[in-house]
Length: 103
Image 1 (cartoon, rainbow, N blue to C red):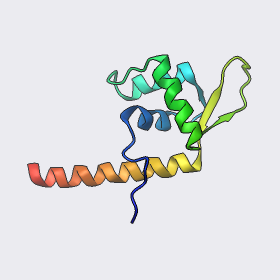
Image 2 (cartoon, rainbow, N blue to C red):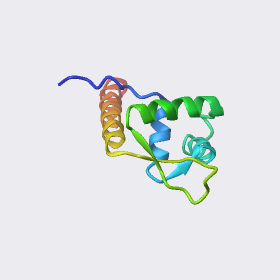
Image 3 (cartoon, one colour):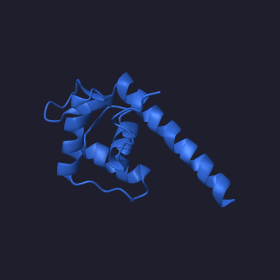
């Protein structure tokens, strides 16, 4: 099986995709990523918007309607869910073989 060219996802992108299972705007995405990562991942606005630009280009996320016209809101796409699942499976496998070696 051919490996997906987007894998492995960066930690930042992984968290952004997880957050976007529910629609969110940029500042909320930054807050939720920090919350999910227990403070380990803190993004600057430039990092977030660079990641959003790439995720839109790869069709892993898409913009959705927002009541607040000043904010752009995004949500994960089916393609984004597929690549997230692939990376999750990759990490599960790595965790399993590492556990077997360490224990």
